[in-house]
Length: 150
Image (tube, rainbow, N blue to C red; front, side, top):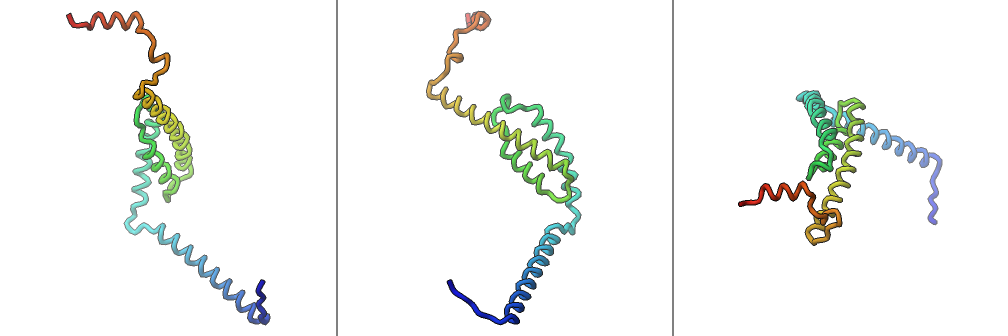
């Protein structure tokens, strides 16, 4: 292990410079944050209003279009929307809480799509289960008779 010998004055000077560097770093981080939050064209309120207007549509889709009933649910896009909603400046915490609900829905949609994909692959290779090979019902036979060309 190497040793460094210095006087108390040198040590205090080194500490002072380290403290100055830390203060400067903090000031620069603060300045970066201020620059990121500037909105010279006053667009942030419009963007927030747009998101708030779109939110009921997204909520409706999430609430009424269950992944089991819709093939190809755009959950990647919903994930991106949730991520932007969480990090968007100028929004209240209520809107950020929606993102958590969307993420829960996304997990469900991904599971459904994965299961659906496995089932599609099984069908493609003729690996259908017993429920899919069941005999036609009486009602189905009647429909076939009615629709049979004469």
